[in-house]
Amino acid sequence: MNPLAVQIAGVALESPLVLASGVLGTTSASLRRVAQAGAGAVTTKSCSLAARAGHPAPCVLPWPGGLINAVGLSNPGVEGELEELAEYRRTCATPLFVSIFAGSADEFGQLARRVAAAKPDLIEVNVSCPNVESEFGTPFAADPEACGRVVREVKENAGGVPVSIKLSAQCASLARMAVVCRQNGADAVTAINTVGPGMWIDVGTGRPALSNKVGGVSGPAILPIAVRAVYEIRKAVDLPIIGTGGVSSADDALQLIMAGADAVGVGSGVYAGGVELFGEINRGLAAFLKERGFDSLAQVKGLAEREGRP
Amino acid sequence: MNLVLPSHAIRSLPIQQVATHSAELKSILFEQTFAAEPGQFVMLWIPGLDEKPFSVSDVRDGKIEITAKAVGPFSRALMECRPGDRLGLRGPFGRGFRPRGRGLVVGGGMGIAPLRYLVHRIERDRASFRVALGARTAAEMMFIGDFSKCGAEFATDDGTLGKQCLVTGLAARLCVEEAFDVIYGCGPEPMLVALKKLADERGIDCQLSLERHMKCGIGVCGSCCVDGSGICICREGPVLDRAELDRVADFGRPHRDATGARKGLVPEPPTTN
Ligand SMILES: Cc1cc2nc3c(=O)[nH]c(=O)nc-3n(C[C@H](O)[C@H](O)[C@H](O)COP(=O)(O)OP(=O)(O)OC[C@H]3O[C@@H](n4cnc5c(N)ncnc54)[C@H](O)[C@@H]3O)c2cc1C
Ligand SMILES: Cc1cc2nc3c(=O)[nH]c(=O)nc-3n(C[C@H](O)[C@H](O)[C@H](O)COP(=O)(O)O)c2cc1C
Ligand code: FES
Image (cartoon, rainbow over all chains, first blue to last red; front, side, top):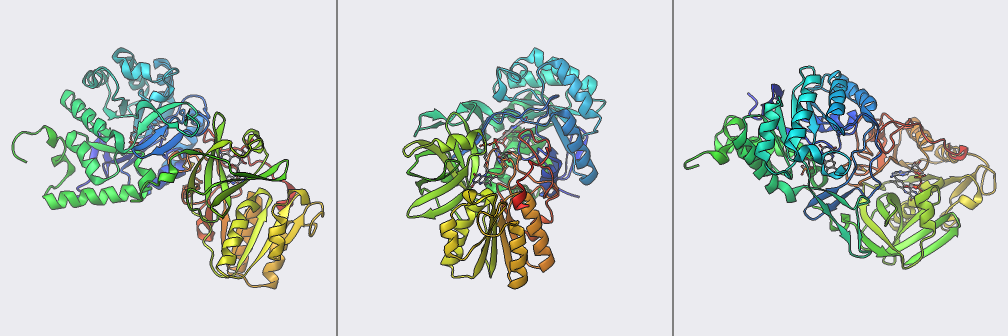
């Protein structure tokens, strides 16, 4: 038996590592590449009904704590996206998660219907991206009622494809958001999206370096926030959790699993580690299980909440 | 795991020097704050406008140089920059040329920029090489003085410099006359496709520098990934070898714009075809 095998909402993954949305996964070829590098599933860059070019560069910048980005949700639109999905399906068997975002619950429903036709293994609903605050995103992620409407609308249109809601750490109560997601039919939650927004100023010119001025913070700096978020959600609901944020080593992934995650998203880590990071973390996880005498990751999941001596 | 390079963080530097080749073609020099190999590139930021990739065209006397041609809004704004203006610079990015054996250096149009640095490196290593360069017209040929010193052959569309033919014609002839271990190339993609074919026919390696739409430069955003293998041009390129090029499904074909959608290739000037 593969000790790294996990299940997310009925989808069997060979590894708990899931490529996080928006990192490399813009085309079928780049998704396939990450799958071949050892991801258990790959998530596409969030797509919308119409194409978007996103913000001008600089839109992704590294800093000593990780990355700050305001890509601006560029994507070829659902039409182009469907071509990529079909090509991926033809050429790669690794489970495919499709991320969607929209400006209204109704639009979310339309998008869900379109992408469900491509038979992805899961639809991830991006309600939490802080980059386009004024336009989309934040209203749903921070507003339980609006978020509930989106979940219902997507579930109704998803034709049986499991649905995960991607939450932001920045809301009044993550526990409440998770409960709302479950009550409205979500099959899983993904947590967390980028944190912030933050700002990076070039001191030579005194100007914010991102063209959008502000952007979401990700990478090592946000790992402790992601771990806390997963822990809080795990205490509130029994939904599968794709714990995401700041993972760049097997120990980081284990922290999220011990906090209660079923699978682990990896995004910004590929900056320092390359796509090879997926294989590296897989090997690290397998070595940990072997060394500590565990047969599966399920035995490690949620350890943080267990009582007694370790 | 690689370490995060401090020079990858964005940082503005004052321009030290501007070398004007023509109103449309300039070299911009900065204090050298990081090492760069021939074929590697930097992301250059004009605050308030945009940030775009530019090859390192030379590193000398503690200065790092890029050479740009005015083709659109960003590069036209670059032509207006003066010494003392602060531009953002981060890098070095990608994998450059890996000089080995006897090389044939082939450049077309703006693709000539990184090749002068490559030639300086090959000369330093005392390896033997030949150079063939093409442009539309003599006025658009870069670094003629530098390249003439090393016996470069020139081709122009209008015959104003060197032979009136395509640079790939020069390259093919040189390959018949002399034996090379590797062809180095940078220029319009149709020219690169022809060089790849030449290398295949001669059974020698090639190292060709590709361009794809870039946003991050650090292998994260996915906008520069080629079809087929999914190779990330900003990180594993821009210089790919023959085996890697065989796994680029969109080599010489339409590639992607800022949205990630496939677009038509911009028609290239006939010279360098
Ligand atoms: C690895 C690499 C090295 C380069 N080196 C040089 C160089 O040494 N000298 C030089 O003059 N030019 C170089 N370029 C091209 C340079 O980036 C473009 O000329 C510049 O971005 C044009 O911007 P613009 O606003 O002036 O023109 P636009 O009208 O915006 O674009 C003109 C053309 O430039 C290219 N381009 C535009 N934006 C980008 C982008 N974000 N990423 C990649 N290509 C883009 C496209 O082919 C486009 O059709 C390089 C490109 C790459 C990818
Ligand atoms: C460049 C970049 C682009 C991103 N784009 C998206 C996106 O389109 N949709 C989305 O839901 N999350 C997006 N994210 C957020 C990531 O999926 C992830 O939730 C977050 O970065 C935290 O994980 P990490 O620290 O492993 O990157 C993006 C992150 C980065 C760095
Ligand atoms: S430019 Fe972002 S991955 Fe290459």
